[in-house]
Length: 247
Length: 227
Image 1 (tube, each protein chain N blue to C red):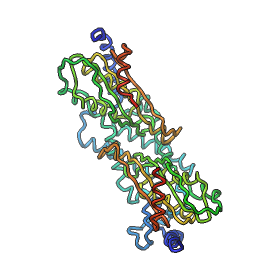
Image 2 (image 1 turned 90 degrees about the horizontal axis):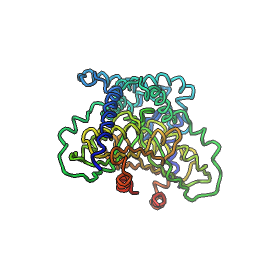
Image 3 (image 1 turned 90 degrees about the vertical axis):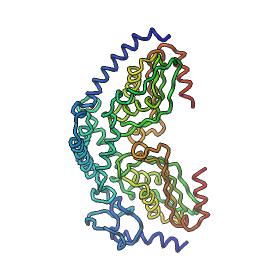
Image 4 (image 1 turned 45 degrees about the vertical axis):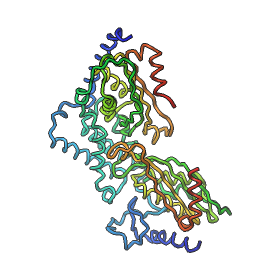
């Protein structure tokens, strides 16, 4: 148990020293900073941890709305549409506001959402919150991804308010994402907040970029998972988690 | 049952022609039809630049690896989602109308449909069910699905989409009746705003015999809306 906790947190500690081997939504693969290739990021870039800074504020949103709306007007014209027709008159503004909503995860910090809801409980059985609806945006095509997230963790003296698990999902999914990274970010956030014995996160999602265009496979689903701590080490724990989320 | 609907068909024909003009206004700019490749790629570049601006305004780091080619990919994706503007019914239908002495209902159901909400530019998707009562002319079945594609790959409003599909079939085949039902989930309602996950919107257009005769309509609905 002790050993597994240590392996889990060594990567977290490295992040806390500000080595910024990872940037906002950039590669998080838990490698030590030196091994990160191409890590020439500006000094102002963000640490990938649950104490990360917001890159956007509500005031920023208001200030960027006009240029976002203008970008959408350009897109409408480029597609051959007439931005002056009745149905499209306010579309640039609506679409810009919608896109800001779809990326509101950049405005939020885990620490705001979690700080109050960690409780000391002497519970060491698995806690699972499953079927959390998730909506994200594919960072490659800017097209929606949606699906369900299942989270399980084994508390180690500390438990988390249940809705906070769903709020963690919201913060990381309302961004331009890659499903693999999203899964990992959720798992790492819970790990850093609670230091549990283990965390498991499974996401099954449909990618509109695959369904609406490109290869156009209507029924395909992508499943990714991250298992940390005892969920990774102990096959029985993992099995129990996977069985319980299927039922 | 089949013949006194001619006057109705004429009205629909007029309606459809008006809609064609409207659809020119709707975006089929005449210059678009004659555009050369350079003009097209110009447009793509402009859309691409708009997406680059968008990414930085949203607070993202435009230079990170995952986002480097995103403006171009997003521009091409959006181009694909609106390819219906460049396609015309005549091109796809002309060969596939056949004379058949069949006057029973023909239904093609569960046609997957993907469109973009014209108010938020966010996808909506679902299924279309189409039925028609032939009047000496039948159409190749896949052409019904292609008609759906032409009209759905645009910035749309579900009501208008349903009507355009019905009118296109009416005009092309002059059948005794046409019925189109679309049920779709709107991401603008699911992912944002009121955020109702399971709501779905159903619109329908019934022309000719489907409008006049409740028995025919009932038969159509019974055959398509089975749960």
